[in-house]
Image (cartoon, rainbow, N blue to C red; front, side, top):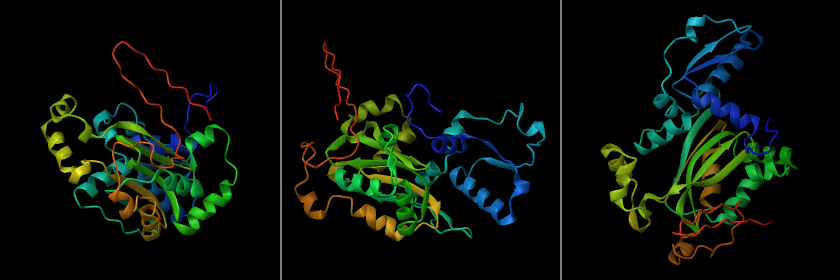
Length: 288
């Protein structure tokens, strides 16, 4: 998959991302499965990408007009088609429906206004899945036990994606990207509350700026948790409870400070930090 050793994605991650980005998806070898299995696959694909046109095929036979010179692809629409992004948008508008369908496939958004304790979050993750950094180092032992723990306690989590707030890493929004067995939590961009509002207009129009303002609440601005979970037979109550237990407690929040980055035991994978100082160049070196 990655002969040069530069990538961080598994085959499962690449496949899911392709499904999320496509506007036409072919489900081949449909003649080899039962009606129930077929419907199950279609439900999963629909959850991952509710806007795509899904076409069943056998032996790869399809009307070429469906896929060639259709002029149906739109980059803007493709970037907004992923099921997790649709779920986040619905949650922001108060429209998200979390009930499972007849095949047990469902999605919901975990939201909170307190930061994750980095060590508690790392411990939670390593009970049921792997950080991408661990996979790159070849550390995938006990995977079957971790998968069994996930399925027993929370159901089968197929995909989770969104953003999160990590205590001690307060200036930067953390992107949360999980598919298959791997999770990557990495720096995305600064929280907007750390950026002067006059600079927001550089990359956003007036409607987007107004939407950003709505994300602000209390002294911590737009810092928050918003992660979509998609899976089969998800135990939303147990999953939400366990994630809430990874947040800082009310007692910890009373003494919480945005200016003490190393206050909490942090066993999450390290981030590379960029320092922009005029006339100087910094090259961070990480040692294990």
